[in-house]
Image (cartoon, rainbow over all chains, first blue to last red; front, side, top):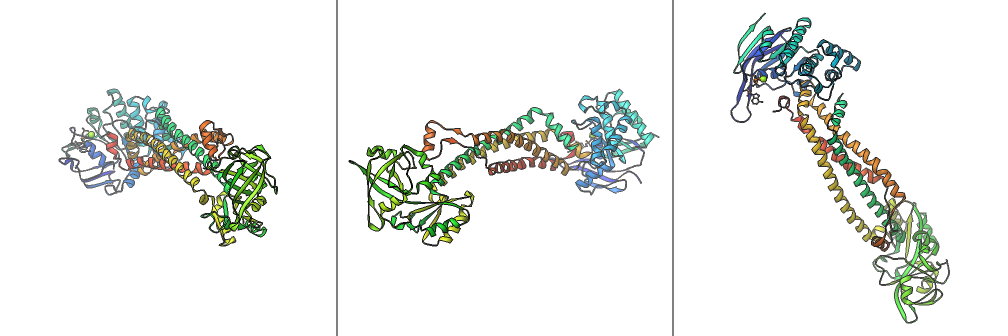
Length: 228
Length: 406
Ligand SMILES: Nc1ncnc2c1ncn2[C@@H]1O[C@H](COP(=O)(O)OP(=O)(O)OP(=O)(O)O)[C@@H](O)[C@H]1O
Ligand SMILES: [Mg+2]
């Protein structure tokens, strides 16, 4: 069973003036263990597609199944719980909670899941070590570099042991050094632990590392290639 | 962790939080001090009124509308016993009062002449303490004490015999000659045109030619000033229709009105105070909600339900208000308690006004729990209203718009 199964999905922004057909009939599936990049020119609908798959935005038409569960008809609260348990997110602008330390940012997710404190402490240490910033555990995001913050974000995304991680332009705010470090990290997690990653990106370095590349244009898939 | 987030957010904007807190503390302190002072004042006014009239007064039927000696009542030992046996009655002060012309030498002045039991009278109105010359009345004696302004108008001094002349019981003539034993100073409301004099009860009965045991009123003192209406009803039922039982609120409506209109002014001030504080709080809450919109978007995205998010925000506001109220109490309770036991003396013109209303020239502060509860309730309502605003904005929160700041 694919972890992501999108069937003929549409998204139209009504807003003011002319409706924008941001996603225009997309079907695709992602299997467990994939390392996939969604690419395409600015405005082609990458973010919109990822948001719908991640249950962050409503779907105008079509069906989306995550691990076999249909999410497009869920209530807001159900969807929130679903995201908590099944999906990890990495955002372009890191988006950590500024008043919490690195460790607390990771534990926050686990607390929402109802994981007991001692287990949270152990697991957050493990995760921080895994992303290579164990020494930053008690720093708040404001005192960390972009690369470090994005590592915390990756650790946070993995805290709930999700079925896959969605990362919208995770490297856009990073310099090339930090970008390749982060990519090494995610590729390693993918290879060693089988964590599924789906990126939306412009970044050639990300595209180079991806094993599957889905290209969009005008809200439609124009190519879907496996790089092997 | 949610509390950690809330707590650190308070500290993130230290100055704003402190300012908001200060606003709440100030509102609570000012509100409490003002109300406590007002209620203390009202209490003193009521006390002085009740000292004169009793909590409840018993008259003959129709006496209040037509204060004639003919409507006086026979306060036999049995009647007094019936009054005293009603639950909650502490004491009954019998008085027989009417008007007479008091003359000395060439001068005459119409005056209220009140027959009273000197002992019981002093217990409630502290009349003996008002004596400025001579001495106070003794039970059963034939003697009179005059209001200072009356005595000086007449030119009468201690030991002089004054002539009393007027209408007595059932068309008889009231006429007597009594020696002045003392002069008192006691300003009653609006009692400046006429004189005032006290005599012992039996001397008054002789003067007005009434039967023994006759009184125009029984001023009933209660153990509990809050049980007035209930006790008045019981008394009326117990005594029957030949008697009219009235509460001090009915016999002194001017005091009730004075308190009410003053209290309305106070409530208006309070309303302004709390509206100002409320908007201050609202500003802080809205600003901090807006500033943290992105954060809320992220929290919601990674799996925190909106309901929970809204609850945390709601509690943040309540905690802020709660801390403000506690600080406000810490500041105001000692002040109020201090001034309750050490009332501020009033001097000058204000003291004269107090004196005119027969209120001791002090600003007493009330420690009535009701004041604190009422303020607490008002603050709670304000906090609940203000705390609801973030709930609305959380409900409307759109994750992606919040995160991207669109
Ligand atoms: N909230 C919105 N309201 C209206 N139109 C929107 C909204 N979000 C996106 N769009 C429009 O939908 C289309 C797809 O946008 P989307 O953000 O998905 O593109 P993208 O591929 O992620 O672009 P970029 O590479 O610049 O991030 C664009 O034309 C965009 O203007
Ligand atoms: Mg995008």
